[in-house]
Length: 289
View 1 (spheres, rainbow, N blue to C red):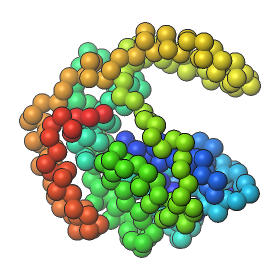
View 2: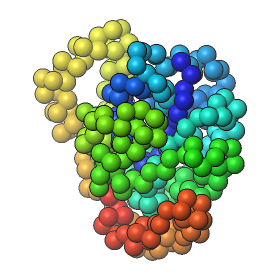
View 3: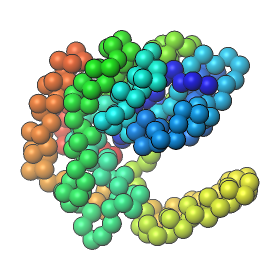
């Protein structure tokens, strides 16, 4: 089945929430995996590989996927347009400092960043994409070179938390599917902010899970989780991010505010959205994971 829409990101801007509220809509054929990354990282796999991920079912009028890597991928806009010039695009954007900090927590949780210094400041030195992915105007301009504005839906991360039902309805109506559908995932919290005390232990657990599910024993794994083992493991190996990662320094906030200011001004012109509330977000809110 050929996709008619894609969620393009940005990363750490509620893309999992978007996937979840689309997954149980009866008029949507969603990819079997959330992030296919086809137009960014897997383009050499070919269209047949891509389209195998979408299973047609009765009543489906829209098919799509959600891959945050597309948002800042240099080649993604032209590739998507060549594949389907009528593709509908959904972009979720978050106040860029908060997005960068959430990105940092994700890198620590996955074990990409390890060691004694897990500060946000070290993360910025180690990973330039923290800032690069927040250059929203730059990235959206590239998409709008290939697609008309009416094919791009822009949603602010803040709105998901303030009125998720209204955001879901906007998404459904943009995709021209039933806007009255109420997703079971509407109020679920996605991607909790935590870190693994032992990345090695987490890697081992994921390897065992992969082997078990690979031999067709997913139900066994799920039953083990329901016995309380999942909760016991999490209590041993998980810690709240803020207990492991020190809070960002005030000068870091000030520096990134200056870095992002021109992008925010350009984004307001580009989209017609007033972003003044992003400039006045109190520090505690900015640091929310």
